[in-house]
Structure formats: C-alpha cells, structure tokens
Length: 403
Image (tube, rainbow, N blue to C red):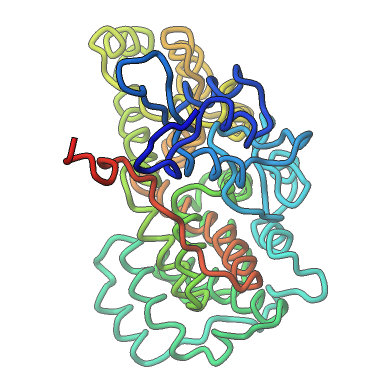
C-alpha cells in the first residue's frame, strides 16, 4: 500500500514498519503506545501510517538483545563503559555503587570511574594550580553561594593549568584530580588540600559529629555517577565540541543548579525540616490529602525503590539519626503514596542529622557528581565524536497547508 502519494518517504505502513524493526505488529503497537513511534490515521479509513524517521531512529538506537541492564523506557543514545543503572543501583565499571559505599573513598571511586590504574592521580603533590586572578575572584566571591564560588574559580582555572588539554589518559586523570580538589576548596572556601575529601567536608561542616566522616564518605560514593542524567548529558554534549575538563565541569554545575535536578534536594531538605516540628503521620496525611507533592520520593528509573537511598538511610539509622526521619517517615510516605524514597530524601536526612541547613546537599552532590562528569568527559573526548542529536519534528507535514 502506498501511504502518501506526495511524501511517501515520511511514512511507513504497519507491515513495513514492523519489518524494518524486525518485530511483530503487536510490538510495533506497543512502541506507539509508549510514544516511541508516532502514528497517524490515513484519511477517514482505519488504516494508520507510521513516521519513518521514528522507526529508523528506534532501530538504530535499540540496545542489543540480551543486555537487560538499562531500565529507562527510552532507547539508549550512546555507548558507555563508565556506568549503568540496575535495580540494585548504579554500577561503576562493573562494581555496584552500594558495595563500594561500604568501604571506598571518593578518590578511589574517581580513579575507578576514570579507568586509571597506572598511577595515582590523587598523589599528595598533585594540587590545583591557582593564579592571582583566581585568588582575587575567590576573595571577591566569598559571600556568594558555594556553587557560584565554584563556577567562578573553575572558569579561570584552565588558563593557568598547562595540562588542561592533555590528551593522555594519565594526564587527564591528573587534571581531574586537581579539578576535584579545586572544586572542593571553592565550595568550602578553604585552601586546596590533599586530605581526603570526606574528611575535609566533615571538618568544615560537622566537626563535632562522631559519624560525620563515615556518613559523608558513603554519600559521596553513592552520588559519584548516575549514567546519563541531565547534567552528565550536558557535560558530554559540551565536551564533544573539544573543550577542556574544567569547562566541562562548569557546564555540569550549571545544569545541576536546576530545581528539577540538583535543586530537588533542597525541596526535600525543607520538607524534612518541617517534619521535625510535627507528628510524622499527621504531616504525611495532611500533605497527601491536599494533593501536595512529596519531594524526595519516586524515581523515573527505579520503580522498586532507589538502592542508594536505602543504603544511606540504613547507615543513618545505625549512626543514631532521628528514627522519625530515617525510618518512620519513609515507611509512612511509601504506605500513603506507593512511592519509595530516593537519594534526595536520604541526603536531606543526612543534612539534618549533621545540623546543616537546606542547600548543603546540592554542594555535596556537586562535589561527588563531578567525578562522574569527568569520567564521561574523558570517554567522550576519547571517542573524538561530536554529539549532534536530531530533533523529533512535530510540526505540520510539508505541503499540509495545501489540503
């Protein structure tokens, strides 16, 4: 059957589309119902036609059969050896993040994600290279929020680092370590240090809490990477143009600031603060009854719960965190909504446990996730390809105004 006499290349019949994909008609209709392929009625008949670009795009992007680690409903858009997502949480180069969280430091996880085994990028002498301009900006931006301080420092950092565009894997890993240490010092407003990052954070944020170092270490590891989340995708697109690692992390930080990404943790932190002033069951009942959102619950990938949140909340409970927040609230909210806590809620409980105000969780997120950004940036640079996605056109078909 000829689908459209004027523009036949735009459309396929059901039989042609199914054959192109190598699937049954039932599977084709499932793709349509999930919004992966657009279909349109042909005139006043019951026959439908299917957008050829959608069919061919899906065919090119589908993961190989038998590789069932990807959980998202959308097809994969690129190959990566850095990480993947499973019901047990993210997997960093073949190792579950929750397993690493039991013992590893962020520096060890960064070295794993960067696939650097030949040398130690976090050697004590590999400290950030600062300039007079950076020192002046650091002083001038001292009163600004942590992410703003970090952005101003990183924007200048590559100018003074002669190795910013180093193309060797070892060289890029060393730049990544200096970058991570500079980011940490900018967020904390302290001199760059070779001290373990979780120890720097604990000393600056919660020096009197006996479990601060262990809890922060665990949280950093759990947050280090999460496949192609919005900020990581931003980093890969940006670095595919050939920019250096400093500028790539700047791109990630800007994307992270959005209220639907890194900023979501602040909403959860504010809710946790509200919970501490009332009875948990009543708070949950009133909020659900009013139809208000429950920040920090539900996840677009983890349908049966976020393993990272489970791990961190369990650690918080063992460390003596308020059981109303670490145990009772997750149970009550899940019972009322059917949603499970995600890492944003667990971070909010962590911040409250350490006596920190809402907003610190985003700074912690930025430090940890920069490890993943650098890993993906290195991988993208090694591929030598420019990311140039195509838009999915939803406007009128050519010549439609003639009809």
